[in-house]
Every structure is written in C-alpha cells, then in structure tokens.
Length: 209
Image 1 (cartoon, rainbow, N blue to C red):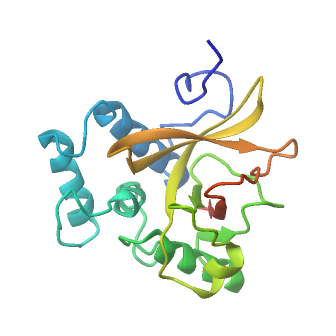
Image 2 (cartoon, one colour):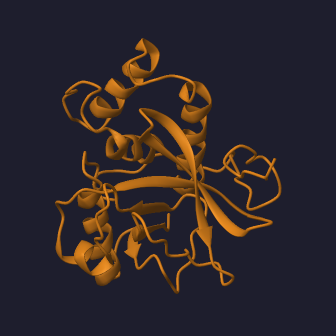
C-alpha cells in the first residue's frame, strides 16, 4: 500500500511542541485532539453534533443546526480555544471573512495573522491556515484581497513532512465528509504550496503569534 501521510502523520517531519503557550502550537493540537475524538463520527451523531454546537457558541454565534456549513466555525473555534482574541482573529462562519481580515493585516503590516499568496514566497508551517476553493470555483488571492463573501474552505496545518511523492502539509478541517478529517496539501521543492487543477488554493494565513 502506498504511503498516505493523512493516515500516518506521527512520523518524521516538523513536530509540534504541544507544551507551548502560543497560538501556533495550541491551534494544531486542538484540531488534532478534535480529529482523534470525532473523526469516526458523522455530524449527525450526538457527540459530534454537540461539539459542533459548541464551535458556534464559542465564537458568539447561534447554532443553526448541523446542516449549516460549519468548517469555518471549526477553524475559528480552534483558533479561539488556542487563546486568540477577536482583536487578533476575525472569528466567523465564513472562511472568506477571516481570510480577508488576515490579508488586510498583511497589507498593513499589523496583527498576528497575515494572509499571503499561497504560491510563494512564503511556505506553510504548523499552525498556519490554508484556504482553498470548493465546488469547482476558481477564486484567487487577488479576489480574496478585495472580497469577503464567497464560497471556500480552509483547514489548519498540523504537520509539515516529506514522503516519496515529495513535500506535504497535513491539515485538519471541519465539515470534511460531514466530520473532522485530515487532508494533504502538496508542496514544491522550495517548500511552497503546489498549485492544483481543481479547487485550487486561495490564501495561506501565517500564524505569527
């Protein structure tokens, strides 16, 4: 069987100091803990449904039910549970909103979450957030810079590694297959994110705290 980094993520690669007190170490640990606890459950199963409710209420929003898209509130709740404040991160039910705010931070040279072009020169690190298109859309970084309301997805980087196919970033995201799942983002030889033909990447949010 071919090596699958989404199945075997506890190997060599960039490791996480789970004893750290900063957001860039706590956010991926929070995401991994939630994945470990719930990845075998569906959003309709009461334990995961209850946790999804807490994702919404943690960031100050009413719970609309598990039928509503909850991937952005998953990311927002993980970042909030890691210690980020509303002044540092735009907690939202839309990925496009917190991405837009992070891009404005980058442009202004302010804040601790900076939205940058996913295709370089910045490389993904553990604790960063990678945003991508969904549903066959083709939004790009330029679009994200000037718009804050469009369909997309994002997930938290929990490992940077290398396998026989090259470099990768392993992410954990919510509402992936109606649960909390891991995905692989391929990297180029220089460490930057590799473009793909379907649902390409839009933005890389660097976690600088």
